[in-house]
Structure formats: C-alpha cells, structure tokens
Amino acid sequence: MEWRGHLPRSKPQDIAPAIKSLNVLNKKIIECNACARLEKWCKTVASEKRRAYAEEEYWGRPIPSFGPTDAKILIVGLAPGAHGANRTGRIFTGDRSGDWLYGSLYRNGLAKIPTSTARNDGQELYGTRIACAVRCAPPENKPSTEESARCAPYLLREVELLLPTVRSFLVLGNFAWKALLNTFQSLDPVAFKEYLRPLPRFGHGASFRIVFRDGVERYVVGSYHPSQQNTFTGKLTEGALDAVVKIAVKRAR
Image (cartoon, rainbow, N blue to C red; front, side, top):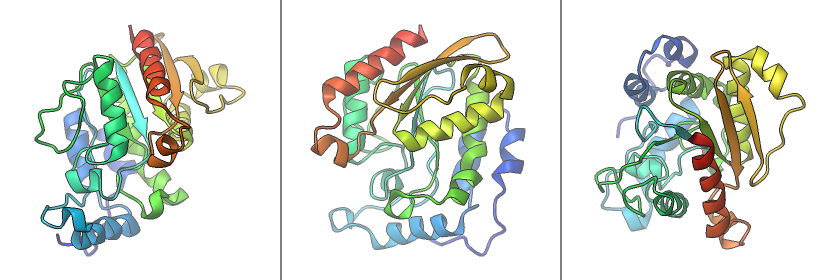
C-alpha cells in the first residue's frame, strides 16, 4: 500500500460539518489523511504484517463505522486494532475484542452471526451501529491528544446524523467515554451544562441521561472495553458485557 504522506492533509473540522449522510461520512473517513503519524503507522503495519496474516492484504486505512444508518444504539470504542480492524477494514473485526463484542451482540439479538472475521463474512447488525473515537490504529493503542482532537469532528457529525433515531449509547472504555462527553458538549452546550454537571464518571454499568434541544431523552451506558487485558484477567466477563448490552437495548426502546 502506498503511503499518502505527500498529499495535502485532510481537515476533518472543515469536512465533517458539511456532510449530509452517514454513507458519505464513512467515505470521507476512509479517505482521511489528517494525522501523519497514524497514517504512517497503519501503512507500516499493513506492509510488515503479522506472521499469521502474511498472506492477507491489510486494509491499512482509517476505519469507517459499521451498522445501519437508522440505528437506535450507537456503540463507541477507542480505536481500531493494528491487526484487527486495520487488517480487515471493519471495526472490531478480526481480533479477540471483536469476538467478545459481536458474541454479546448476537446473544442479545443485535447481530446476525456470533463472530466477525472479515468484511465479507455476512455479518449484519440490527438497530445498532459501531463507531470509534479515533479512526486509525494508533501505536501502542494510544492516540495523542492532538490526534484525538483532530478526529473528533467525525464522531460529532456521526451523532448529529443519527439523532433522528439513536436513543442509547454503549461506550467501551474510559477513553471513548471522555470522547463522547466532549461530543455532547460540542453538540449541545446548554444540555451538557444542565445534565452533565458534575461530569459523570466512567465505570462498568455507569449510566446517565441527557436531553438535547430536540427534546428526546437519551441514555449512555459504560462498559469495560473487551480488550484482551480485561477479558483475560476476568475484569470483564461475558455475563457482565451481556448485562450492559441489555441495558442499552432497554434504553433504546
């Protein structure tokens, strides 16, 4: 894959607000090259590959959201995995985190099949869409503050375009929790001040409600991220993940 570092840098803060549909937003996300460090890292990983995937062609680009454009539930994660979504081209696909997440969605009636291995595996989501705070796989899974801020307009626009249907948010991890709070502050500063002072603290099962200027009540539910660290140590269990997914489903009705 060719690194596009020679091209003019994308400006999400200028691009995202003018986008009129989620499908176009996904297209612009894929084309984005705003962050030189992340772009180079994604391409390097895609070129060097992990031995187990040596025969596969890596995606190596920003990752679009996945799921219907009229979703009632929006799941927000941190960023793509270097050898997961950065390889397969679909969020939470091709790694153990995805196995956990899609398995839970399937058990709760939100996914067609219990696994997510490739873009062409036949997976579908029902009433649910998955996005992430940062769209490129970052080194050591740690985007910089500047990279996070640069990518934020995409999540903001995604939430704006989903407002007619979205009723609940399932947030995976503290990083995504903070990103969504920042999104809400940009989206509706008045509602943010009224409903989110003091700021809600992240925790597994933590939740809060907010009513934007459209008058619709929406809920946010927190979950530990289904990372290998959390699942291997037992910090997150299948039962605990299923429980918060059920809450998100209930709040979306």
